[in-house]
Length: 426
Length: 143
Image (cartoon, rainbow over all chains, first blue to last red; front, side, top):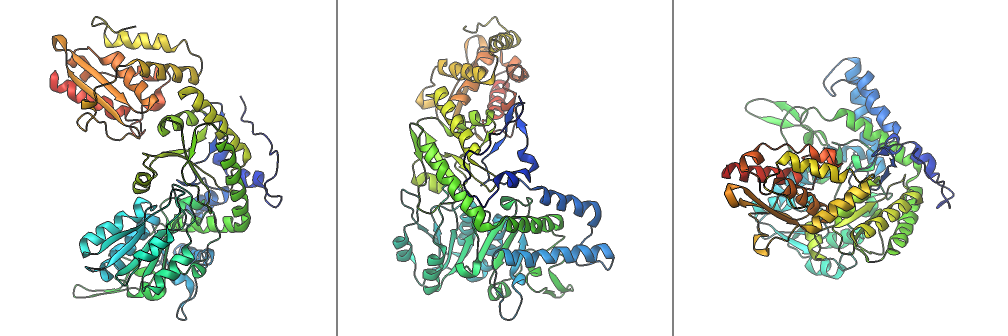
């Protein structure tokens, strides 16, 4: 059977050509298990890559490969320029402001991903700033990567973790948040968009309240950057972290944005080459930000391809992508609700990308396995958010997560698959 | 068709291959797998503990391998997911009431022949790989 995709019955947004967007992704043009056209709905885990990103990655290795910052030769200079130019692009991509007369891009630190970015802040800022009696405020809907680094540093420093609870809809209880804020609160670490529920948190208001209490705010932007136009200056975040691979870029690369004066005051993260100013056995002085946080040869190829991903996404028009995905999520929510015994997990008023649910008594693993056999890729399990699953008293969910290239036919295939799941396990 | 002590692991695997060959598509095979899972007896709640729990699965899986009659392996198990329970049933069909020495060295190539090869990867979150490892370790201790 040929892979056939029905034409879109109704265009969600006349302004947005989803067919053209989709055509840019070679991985989406394939059949699984011989005859099942791929329906990729695991975008919160990682997105597929457009040809432009793949070409940039292979182009770099084909013609441009060289180590950065040290060579006097042509290729090294060219690679260094390309590598540093992406910093400016990423600063622009998240609206990083200039600081103290210094350019915005000096506040862009390359990391392996969101997880490393959070670990970096915990290990440097956290170790220097936290002490006994201090509190770190986290939400109940955090990904494990925004919980465990804080647990570790709190154990070390004697600081304590406090939790902002969530409602049954999966929204933060703002009053409870305000109540837990005090002069003891040194940091509020909160996700912009929940990876398990899709809830968009009111980060601006959180930042405002936290700053009034004298606390800093770290925002996990892994799930927001691919789906929403993000402006860290408007959000007011002190730290903002995200990953390349969830925004159509390569794996192994991410960004930490931090306010200049915080970054300047933070001790280095790892030691090695590239992060130093001068080294002797008696004394070593460190490089300026952002390089003092980037020890060793960095992931040059992925940085350069991340720049291509940001450019590609910007070209699609991020507000347009948001409108398309929002309309599609509404359509998906309506269609999935038609199925008997469906229980949506996470029904916040403001959501992005994610549809998490349970189907009667069917174990998510069973549902995921049958959907997979039909070519529909979803995620099942606790989504690295066990405290949140505990709040809902469930072991996990089935999670479909949308991206810019998904359309109604993908949702229809999901619904068709879920009906089959019901028949098989009902 | 209840397994008998006389039938070897290979003979029982061949039975399963013949049984699954009656189904053309993946859906029929999966439905049969789920049915096989429904037929195995539930293990006692007392055995649904960490000692019998298989790590690395999205669902809960318990496998109990104990000495049975004539020194043979007595294998029981359960899962809260239907497909995983079906995989447990396949292992029981082939490995229950077999000499531990035969279980220690068993190869499970038949899973590929019945169209369940996608479950064989050690990185797959169904724990089949871990189940087989635990059964083999237990068999080695009893052999």
